Image 1 (cartoon, rainbow, N blue to C red):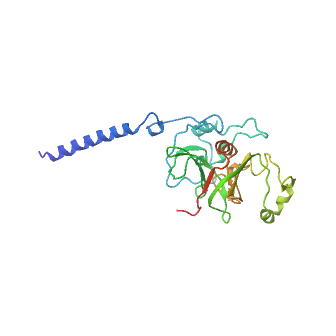
Image 2: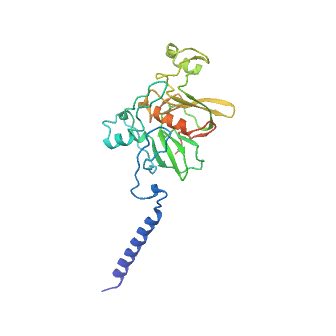
Image 3: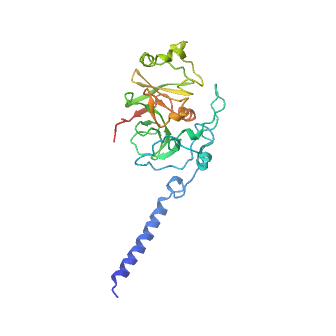
Length: 266
């Protein structure tokens, strides 16, 4: 009998042992997300550190469908605390109906490769995600709604101002396109607008994006239409689920850098 088959079997066994030992060495108890089987539970309040299992970034994220059907009980348990009613607000924020949003666009911790510094917000309009960059190649990822065709924008900006339950002052160009908006407006301190509240399109929070000394007129804000998350429907602003925008608002200071990627990138 030839010795070659026995030699091949021996080499295969040695290779398997070495690979198994390498996996064990790559698992560091100080960084449990590097270990096979790492699990965690979502935090109980906006702004608290998340302990959700980090997901690897898919090459082609799942796209939202027309309907989402019944919520998977496992997803409902995982996200119930994150999207529960928010207490202590000027206006009520009810629990979000998880069936209205594709689970792909719910808040989660992910691995995310970028050259941007921790604390930077990176917006990916093509895939409808906003990333808050963190240390160690990770980020918090939020689902967003973005500008429809003709209203996209890209570039970098900074958060110049932040407001809770902001008033909404639609640009004159928007009122010209949608004259029916005038019926919902009233004269406020800053002009013709809609006061902050549960029916205001900006939702519970807004962060105002400037480039140098110029207001871009674009905002990161909440929404009264959570079912539009994961779609391209806005006039260029970035809309988020109210619970998510509160979480991002608490984590992000004035002056933070915001990078908006091109929607047409491949």
